[in-house]
Image (cartoon, rainbow, N blue to C red; front, side, top):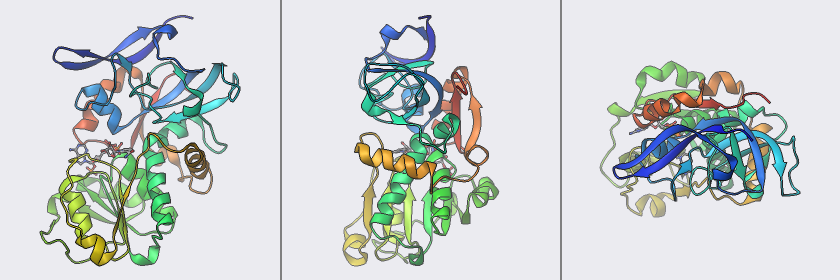
Amino acid sequence: MLPFKAIRVHQNASGTSASLESLSLEQLTSGAVRVRVAYSGLNYKDALAITGRGAIMRAYPRVAGIDLAGVVEASEDPSFRPGDRVLATGAGLGEWLDGGLAEYARVPAEALVPLPEGLSLLEAMALGTAGFSAALALRRMLENHQDPAQGPIVVTGATGGVGTIALLLLRQAGFQTAALTGKPEAALQLRELGAEEVIDRGQLDLGAKPLEKALWGGAVDNLGGEVLTYLTRTVRPWGNIACIGLAQSAELNTTVLPLILRGVSLLGIHSVQVPRPWRLALWRQLAGPWRPPRIEQRIVRAVIGLDEVVQAARELMAGQARGRYVVRLAGDL
Ligand SMILES: NC(=O)c1ccc[n+]([C@@H]2O[C@H](COP(=O)([O-])OP(=O)(O)OC[C@H]3O[C@@H](n4cnc5c(N)ncnc54)[C@H](OP(=O)(O)O)[C@@H]3O)[C@@H](O)[C@H]2O)c1
């Protein structure tokens, strides 16, 4: 097979560096299924790995990209056959396995999900880990009895990939939402995604007491740090906070009072190693009853090439995300 292109991260004396390289299949980590990648996506975690701002990869060199969608070319595992359309999110790609920002990938069969009917390869990557995580958050909140009658759900990091899709999914599930953002100029876009209210993070009074006035029915948090502390202070009795991200900080300083005096729950969201039945069920939900309307128009900021990935990763690290970048490899197959 001819060499193919990939974004690969190397470790060097000053940290790590990412570049567009030519690779052969034998250079990839092993996996029973060879996939011709049609599209990948760009997540905050990919941006951490590509810019070297976060220790995401467990070994070097590694091909970046925690997500991929494509077509099986060959499989040593009977669960997949040439021609099958598949997707993978998390599951070790771009961390301990070579990832999806490449024209070809070798993937363990258990990491792959058959592309559910109702989603194109491009739409699967418009959702990607961001959409899967937002759906996992909604599932966990509903399982813990979150109800629209409890009040609006506040979504932080609202203009980012997870935030954008969380707003769409929550709205569709009947919740009112508020978008907390560092980009008040994106208010119109956030309202189009379903936010009834847009709050400028720069103007937010974070409070100081363990319990402040209870405002929110629940929350989906992508930031961590002092914003997550604020959420613990202001979520109403029996509300859930889905804790997804750390775009601001990995710290959480709070008290037990919201938990024991208001029954607030902090729900952990982890999208990498997810029990396979949950993974399959959530993708079926995302392709079916939870499918966001007009995925391409509402979620995709731009479809970019591999040669644009490093620059796009720098933008995400600077907090400039708006929706999702989809990365075109082979394109529609
Ligand atoms: N737990 C999991 O399995 C899981 C899965 C997916 C993502 N995540 C995490 O969730 C977070 C969001 O992921 P994403 O893919 O949606 O990221 P993204 O597309 O890059 O969006 C991040 C958003 O966070 C806000 N933000 C605030 N401070 C920021 C800063 N210092 N740097 C960058 N962004 C900042 C910005 O929104 P505003 O300007 O609107 O505030 C930005 O648009 C990340 O921390 C990511 O690692 C975790």
